[in-house]
Length: 423
Image 1 (cartoon, rainbow, N blue to C red):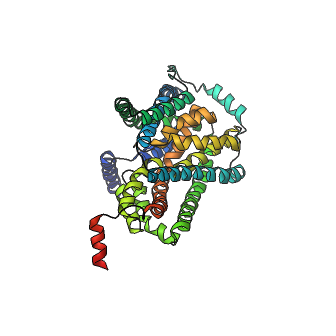
Image 2: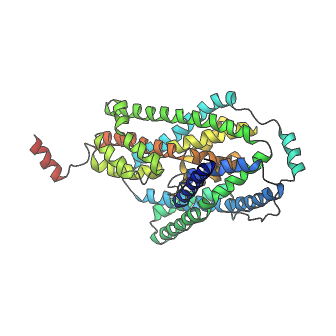
Image 3: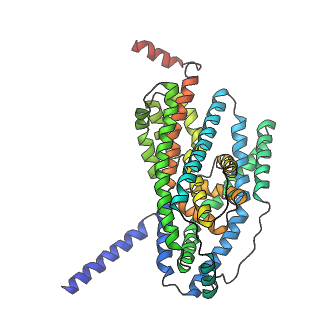
């Protein structure tokens, strides 16, 4: 009997290993696996082995800090230029609504988190014990490599705004092409280098926290944060459609129900761009004119980030409370307004918004490298829900734009003929 059981177990493990090797894991599962493995290995990893991963993390974080200003320039400047070269009141209204929704989502997240998190999350007051344990175990990199950034974050932001606005008004196709190609270079660097190495980076972070005895507090805070953010993004969607219902005089629950296919598609794809066909179809079913939906949905896929802004704001505030970092409402208002611009046209890779937001987190909130790593892990753990919130909210914006412009745009001849036939 034991031989049979052992044979069955070996066959099962062999098949399971083959399945694992054949699967193309999403970034979410890789991050979750890295967290679990880092925690597990933290109890058995010798100090010399942990220092190998800490050395990698030290070099990786230096490279990431070098790349952050380039990410800002590569994505913000071309995005401002491309939006600015378009004209029309419909564009202006869509941009204003998307930006207001993104900022509104961030402010809503801040005030709810500010009221709830201090009662749920305690700051880590064992800094002296942690420091002594750290020194006793000699948990430090073997060596590090300094890679200073070419400019600081605020300089990159101001430069991006200046160049983007100038390219939009001066109509400089050659310069726009240069920055467009530079965006492709930065995007490829993120997709081919940063994202594949993130699981190792996250593994090292949680390995170190486990060996320092901090992981229990962090995981407890993670669970509370994720639960509250999930509840907030449902409330945010209801608020968006209630506001749209004021204009279009429709039942907000029915409108939101019509957009559910887009919501669940975004949960699976984790990409606003990949969900555009479904979002477009559901907006038309909801009563939005097809030509208006064809304009607003692709545009909102790159500029409407209410769910992402809500997540980043809540996670940032939670980590600041955990670390005992000082914060204020004016600080977060400025942070949210800047974040809503920085995330515009974020790279089309999983976790692109948080990569674009790292510069604002470090420049305006003073996040350290370890805090940025925790932000990445927290954000990617909820990436699909934020994307689904962004995509579903696009339908509310499309409804409002349709209310203002449906009667001002001439109906194509074939649609007029179809209308006559139906009468």
